[in-house]
Image (tube, rainbow, N blue to C red):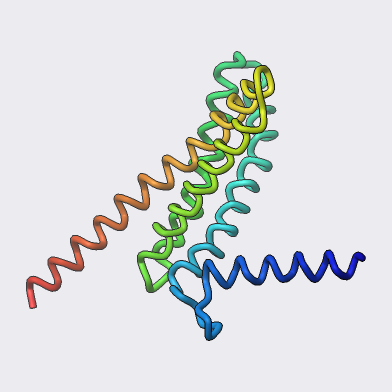
Length: 166
């Protein structure tokens, strides 16, 4: 019985990956889509680490301040720190579309989490979720998306200027 469940789960996962990323011949449909998806998991981990590490540090640093000040710093600093680390990878990859596409995945994850939790929770649970969601998600996502938009736009302008000069 356990073998059948493992087999069916594995088959479902194989079909999921095949539909999303692979052609019938087993080749990637889009390398950009596959790489950005994998990189989005790394970025998610970077953001989780930034929040996990910095929340306690900020709590101790601002222990004497009001709750509003502590919450503001705990919402902003880890998100911006994660964005700095993630956005710096823009310069590492030859394909400059990779990191912006990764942020599209992260935005989709955030929307899916929000919609899913709002459908599952109600009343007080929903308000608690929204409080933590508003504290943890938007800062990193907005700062990362904005930085990627500006960096990619600057890169495209330079590319067009170089093309026009030739």
